[in-house]
Length: 338
Image: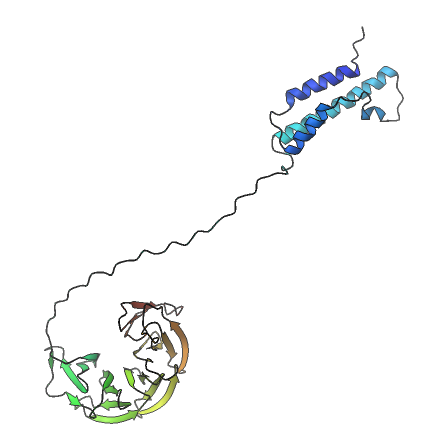
């Protein structure tokens, strides 16, 4: 009996070998369909590689050996392909599941925090004054207005009004603000639309300087006196050397709720430039004292009002609200934002 294998023997051996090395699970739907279609059809007796003409004529047994070699090579290639696909080295499946689309939920909101408990202060002394406001320290003593038209000097050592130095300005005038240093005191009158310069010793009126409508806050800075015109929508700059107005910075339209408090710090003049019709919101305006130009307008939220006083630190500007607002505003001077 000849030990040379017949074509059917090779076919059975190749099929058995493919069953042994085939993966348990087809790597993709395409491979699954192709494999099922191939195994369901009986193989033709005349294989494609039998038609190869290598240009070499051999005896019958020798040609059959060459064909067997090609069959073996084809089997090795097919097995390598199946193993590579099973190990994940083949092409990606055509029915891949898309990645889930990330979703962004609502941003967490800060829980409402209760207002801190009020701290109790024990006063050292009580000075009887009527509706005092706008205290200013001149380096030695405290100046403030009270009532409608009185300005008093208080000795901080004794917490008493010094002598009989309360003075009366023009009859019917209503004091809007006061600022003082060792060279004198500056007082605004909302009804008379004047700023009064007072002698630092006698408190006598040295000069009356006309400014905008209903002047309020006054700030005595280095080489300038700044006045916020409440109903004039502007800020007036006075030269203390000549007692004359040298600039008027318009912040908005004249009206009932305009510039109120004014202060200096961080190289700028800061003005609480009024609130909205309902007493809320408004702007804080930052002015460059070197050019008298507006550097920035900083809008306030609705739960604040741009009509309070300032405290300026090295890294922040603080402003209190007024009316019924219970908000303290902190402004970042680097970004001009609340």
